[in-house]
Every structure is written in structure tokens, then in C-alpha cells.
Amino acid sequence: MLASFAITNSKGRLHQEEQDPLLSSFEVDIHRIVESKSFRRLEYKTQVFFTKKEDHYRNRLTHSLEAAEIAKTLAKSLALEQNLAEAITLAHDLGHAPFGHAGEDALNEVLAEFELSFDHNLHTISLVTEIEKQYPKFSGLNLSFEVIDGLIKHNGTFKDKNIHPLLAKYAKTYDVDLYKYSSLEAQIASLSDDIAYNNHDIDDGFRAGFISIAQLEQIPLLSDFIKKIKQEYPSIEEHILIYETIRRMRNLMIIDLINNTKLNLKNSGIETTEDIYNYPHSLVCFSKEIEEYNQQIRKFLMDKVYQNHKVIKITHKAKRMIRELFFLYMENLTCLPPFLQQQLSSNKKENATLICKFIAGMSDRYCISEYRSFFELTSSYIK
Picture 1 (cartoon, one colour):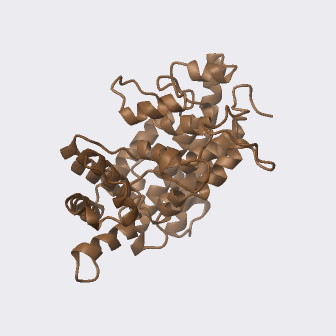
Picture 2 (cartoon, rainbow, N blue to C red; picture 1 turned 90 degrees about the vertical axis):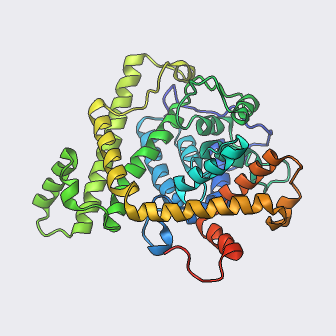
Picture 3 (tube, rainbow, N blue to C red; picture 1 turned 30 degrees about the vertical axis):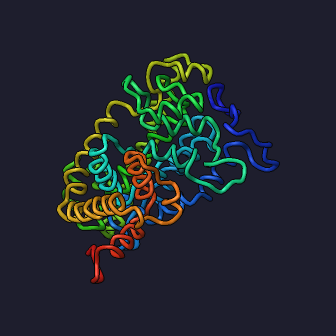
């Protein structure tokens, strides 16, 4: 039985449809997200490490799946709507450019010349509401209002009055109050993202040789886990030690989030979904102790993994590819695919936006292939 403040029914969709005979509204959303082209492309989009060189690094797809499993666990434990939490989590990274945040940075650099910007969260909304085209009656995926609300507020409410015009348009169309908090299911989706990457990036960093067990032992909580595991399994192999440490760490974070959220709900007197929307701050959060630990992990990953010279090397190449492709297309519009040429206008800003969306939709490997087709006569570019 779901809690009184859970989302038990959807308010519907922008384009009205008949109820599916087999699936709930949020189950339909999950199917549509998983069946979208944008979701399939996540398999070839970088999370942190360029996956062409190693089969076992996380990519955007596997990250989304891991985060969704965490979201389902949290929702179940808090008596919330699991399918809604899963749908939001599965869709939250659809708008990422190729090569992760490096791609986003490159697009922002080139768009600055046109007084434009790129935000992967906003691009996610564009994909699920407009760009995806696979249904005869509407553009986009026509997801439930609650999923759209959760995606728009993936990073919380909007304090800034200077709202991006496109975001303001989406908020008005989908009746989203940008200054109110989202459902608990959406708040869960946001924190599930953090739990997933803060743990699996340690695993990938160790696999890449950027992190050692000795370095992990310098973090107090991790040191405690490692010490206990070594006592339990004296001859444990290093890679299994890392995996077991991460498993216990992830479980601790999940349990802490559940217990702290329950405490917040009890102390706040929350009874209905409207109470959740109108509450002055997020109710899904870690305890102070685990939040401090979470910040330690983020700093550790930034120092040891994200700023590692090998990652920076790939990042530099990726940004160069994206910049050069963008200006190639802008200066030679006939280099664009025919379906995009049909959408061009005489307005440079509009064309820049169109080209930005085209590049943002590329997978890593398609971006490399496109770059090579225009700029290279030799074989390998990224090594």
C-alpha cells in the first residue's frame, strides 16, 4: 500500500490518450523511454571513461540503469510509486552531449558567440517533448505530467528569476511551478543519480588504475569498510575488495537516505502530495554525517579521477572535435544531413540552435565518425 503522500494517479498527458489495457500510466512512460532512440544512444555516450578502450567501464546507459535500480529500492522502502521514480531516473540523462560534460562545455563555448547556451537537462526536456518522433499523433514521447515535472526539477527548484525562455515555455505548457518542489519520487530520482555515480566511479577509477586501495583507506568511512572486509576475507582479491567496499558503501547511503527521509516526513507533518509540493525544501536527503562523507567522495573523485591527466587528454580531444564540427556545419550548411537542411532558416541563431541539438544527440562513436569523414585521411584519432 502506498503512502498518503505518494503519487497514486497521474494528472495525465499533454495529448490525451486512452488508458493502456495492461500498463499503468507510469509503466507506459518507462516503456516509451526505454524504446526511444535517445535512450539507445546512451550506450555509446561517455559517463567518465571513453568506453571504446574497455568493455567494463560505465556508460550513460548503464549509469541510468544502476541509478534506476536504486530509485526503485528507495521508492519501495518509502511506500512511494516505484514506476514514477524509475521513469524519471531512466530519462534523466537523455539530453547529455557526446563525451559527457566535456561535450556540454564545448557546446557552451561555441554557442557563446551567438549569445546562446546548452544545458543537458533542458535538452532532455526537448527530446521527450519535441525531438523524438515515433508516434503518429504527437511529437515527443507524451510522458505523464509528473515525469516532466521531475525531469525539469532534476536539480531542484529554480530560485533565479532569470529563467531560460525555453524552460519557461515548457513550464507553462506542462503546468509546472518552477518555484515549488517536485514529488518525493522525483526527489528520490535526483539522489539516486548521486548515489550511483559516487560509487561506480570509484570502481571505474580503480579499473583504470587512477585509484589505489591505499588512497581509499585515507577516507575514514571507506577505511573502516576495507578493514572489516579484509578481516572477514583475508585472502580477498583486490578487485573483489573494491566491489565489496562499494556495495557496502552504497547500501549504507541508501539506508541512511531512507531513515533520514522518514524522519523528515515525520517531523514535517506531511500528509498529502500537495504538502510535498508546498514544503519549503527537499525532504529526501542524507543525514549530516553521510552528506559530509558524500562530499568527501566527490572531492576525492574530482582530484583522482575527473582531473586525471588521461581523462583531461581525452576531454581536450573531444571538445576539439565538437567545436570543429559545429563551425564546419555553421560555415557549410550543406554538410548537414538532408533532413536537417530542410529545417534551416536565414537566422543564424536558429541554425546554431539546430546544429547544437544535432551534435548533442550524437553518440561518441558517431561524433568521431563524422569528424573523421570531414577532417581526417588517417585512421585512429582517439587513442
